[in-house]
Length: 145
Image (cartoon, rainbow, N blue to C red; front, side):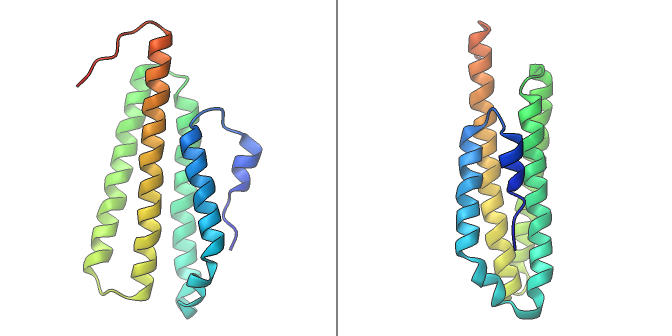
């Protein structure tokens, strides 16, 4: 299976370096662990399609983040709220899989979800860093919550 990482080569996002590095490391790890999917037998194609859907969503979110960072602070805040909602949804999905029968398919899905959640955390850190840098450059004082 080939993940849609060619998107990164074409778009060359200007920001969010931490997140791009995380995606690159996940790609390397994925290529190294391809044989794990083969152990799932006939379920492999279904799990692979499920995983591709989660990764496509992650890449779409990254593209939106790169666009929204040039917008107003309100739009950035709405994006961060959306990012939090996606994070919570994936965490709930992981919780459901944990409480279901621990089949190899569910274990593989949990492993994928944990990697995606970690990547979302990196995206959130990157957005925070870029936003604080932008605010400082405009002379705004950062407010601690």
